[in-house]
Length: 287
Image (cartoon, rainbow, N blue to C red; front, side, top):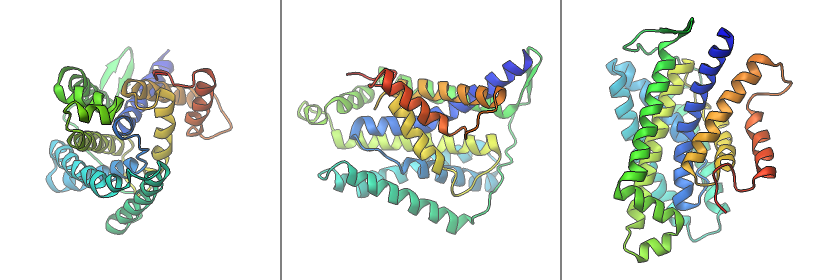
């Protein structure tokens, strides 16, 4: 029973981090219909900026705030100077540009921070707790608390504010929303701000949880998150969260209880194939 509970807690933590990485991608695809692969490099940048800020100040709060602001500005610059000029071209053109941008940002991280793995020895302001005889580490508590806070605030934004209504309108039909008075370009820019800031939070949490930050840390998430937004339903934020949580728990239990002859990262793509055969629109997608 203790092993089961321990694996469940670890799986939920992995799913929470997946959901934060995937959320920004789902939001951006929802409003622009662009597969923002470079979102993973924004996540990597957020981890590095958070690490540098924490090293200089010793404050995790400052690390989160500085990293979120930096990545929000980076996201707006990407939208304005990379994607916006390419909207008139077929969808594969922004996708290719996004892949190129991801590689470029990874190499910039390698140039400025070095190719080696750097540790993120954060000191959390609370200690471990015991639940049913299982020790829950402070890093797990941090992942749960921050992820829950971000998801709750995003839910409030999307369902209780005019900005959330505008974002949902733009995601359904940008031209009609513009004709009805919605400032579509501003809404898209704000979406990039929110998605990129959430990516920064995810980068810091992953760095703290695994105690490592390195230039290529966004490579696997870049393609795994694509599979997750397909499984959850293209452009569906709740679907992205649900798919991420299910994948995190499934990966952890399969690795913990079985000796499967394949990498754990392959499970996301196997799940994508199975879900699309059963439900082509994804778990929470609409026809």
